[in-house]
Length: 93
Image (tube, rainbow, N blue to C red):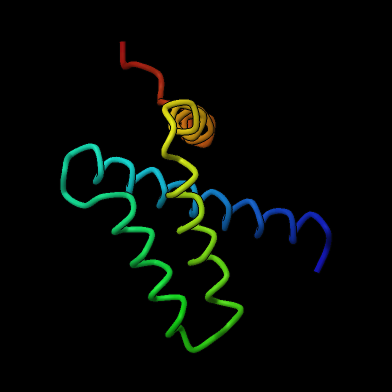
């Protein structure tokens, strides 16, 4: 595996984790579930996950949910996700 391939994999995983944290923020904002409930759920899943390596992203997500409690952190996450979105196609005309 090349360094570029490894960086690509890490970026995909990080982006996916950021997206999950963002969705948890949306669920919290809509009153569907609190951030603490969601973070605890990810941690509980990590505890019973059969692969210790696979449990690491679950714990990172839980940590990200908890650390996104400030408005500044939520705004930063939104900025990061906005940069990850593919560009919009040109308007037909």
